[in-house]
Length: 443
Image (cartoon, rainbow, N blue to C red):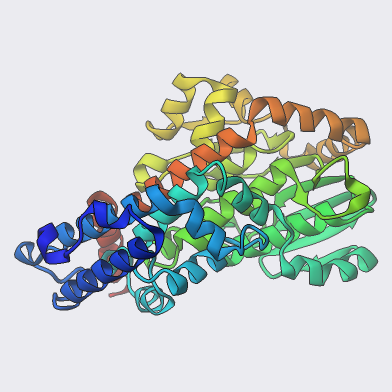
């Protein structure tokens, strides 16, 4: 597939804004027509490969955004007066800039397919967010949008403030004294995360941060019903691989929202508009994590933003990103800072498992106690992290350790790198093998 077939070169989408968006829309329509004439993704022969046409139109999208990303973002947000979250921003871009990102219909058609049978439209969302987050003008505004409390949390806030308890489905929140206990309770899948749990976790984190009666938050896994671990608490099994291989893990609503939403809020707090808080844009609180059983993948990613981590002596940790074929969120940004490059590589690239009693566990955990002593250790930890001086000093530590602009630049790279990994050949081959094993097991 050549540029003559698409009908536009990079120069056509780098010129005057109005002409450039029209040129991109026309080129994208021609590319879509070419793809529509081929068999569905996953059923194409080597001679029917769509790689060339996809590469060409994606190069045009990159060139268009390199020249016009701030104009695009300003139009979508009414001159940066509106704070659109990730999905809202991508949805608006699909309508107002045809051909730039996939439409709602295209994404809906993909949703029912396995990962291996998808066209890979999310890569175009990765390009979009790579350029938006990479912009010094637009990226900070998007980060602010994602730090604002969710509508669900604002709705549930008064009831939580009154009763001190809320059951969100996969997460429960209970205020006990000055501490709010956030319990992850996907007992059927060992707290393996999917879109549902990300939504519940962000709501829970918002509620804790907004609650005036809460001084410190705790995150812990609940008691499991899974046959292998029935009756035991488990912290997290990481990403829900069954959902990933079924094509139910979304770049925007899971992978990006998770990092820019509740995990970032655990670190920096929730952004509020209150004249009385002229001295601080965010409401921040210290957080303690308690690890029972294990923290795998995304569970380890979570630990890197907590102020204090307590683990049972029989717990273990692993971050098997290379084996799963994906990028482990912002762990690659944070892990090297706390543990150094050698440990980081052994964990992320080598798939190393670390036991809580090993010396190297100190890079992930502050305190290790025998399992029967966990409750007492948690209470001591929560009590020691109360108080306004703790909040002020953690704010300054975070400002020094992870400047928000460094986080923004990392997330720009992550948006595209993760999208590409989701549709690379080695990941799709893992999906096929997983699907084959499941089908054989069922048969």
